[in-house]
Length: 136
Image 1 (cartoon, rainbow, N blue to C red):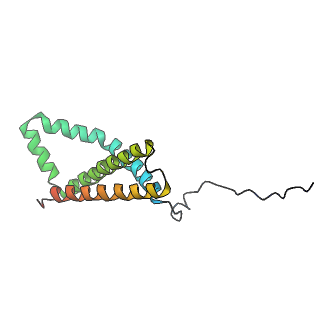
Image 2: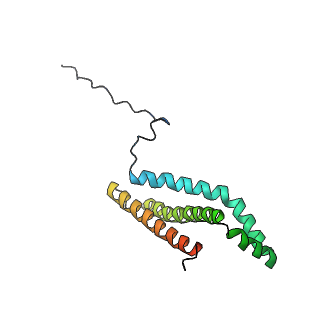
Image 3: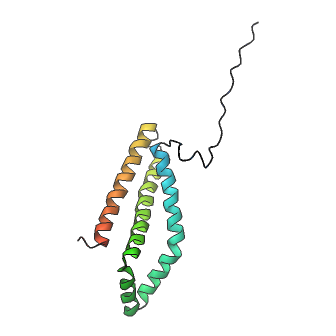
């Protein structure tokens, strides 16, 4: 009996922080990471948003102060980032729910649904930006 030739097994290692910039992640992986980042942004901003909602509903005077606070361009940019975070997290969440029902689980399906998530959330964010900065 001839002994089987043993091939060396491939070695898989975790990538480090230094390799993160050069690592080529597929689009579905980027959407997954952005989904986590947007969820983290929403989680961190939730107490602040609830406080602002509470203050805006207290009285007419506090609502006027809230409107004045939102007139600041820097605050508008923060609101726009939080709007993107919500819209992207919502669209990606729907994508992941569809994946949980075993729809578009293939590599090509994952890429297509990732493109849909990025496109829809970007278009919705542009609409919010136009409304926020007074285009209509």
